[in-house]
Amino acid sequence: MTPCCLTRQTLAEQFALAARLYAESAVKLTSLGKSEVDYIRLRDDTIEAQRHSEAAFRAFIQHVASHRCSVAAPGTMHCALPSDGATGI
Ligand SMILES: [Zn+2]
Image (tube, rainbow, N blue to C red):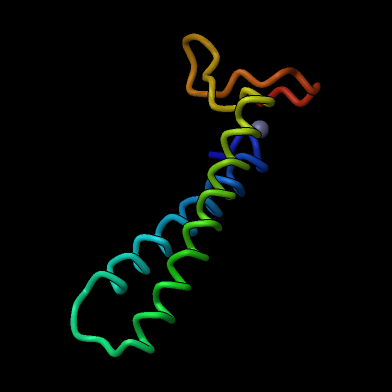
C-alpha cells in the first residue's frame, strides 16, 4: 500500500519519533536515584525533547490542515487529495 501523501508520512514519522524521545526523557528525568549533575543534564534533554516534539507536532497538523491529506474520500480507504493527475489503478 502506497501512502497518498509522502510529506504527511514523513512528518508523522518525525512527530512519532520526537514524541517517543520526549516520553523516554520524561521517564528518565522523573525516576529517582541520580546525581544532581545527571538530573540537570536530563532536565535540559527533556526541555529540548519537548520543544522538538512540539515543533514536529505543529509541522504535522499544519501540513494536514493545508493539504487535507488525513481526510478519506467517501467510500474508500484512500485520501481525498486534490487531483494531481496521478490516479491510481
Ligand atoms: Zn499532505
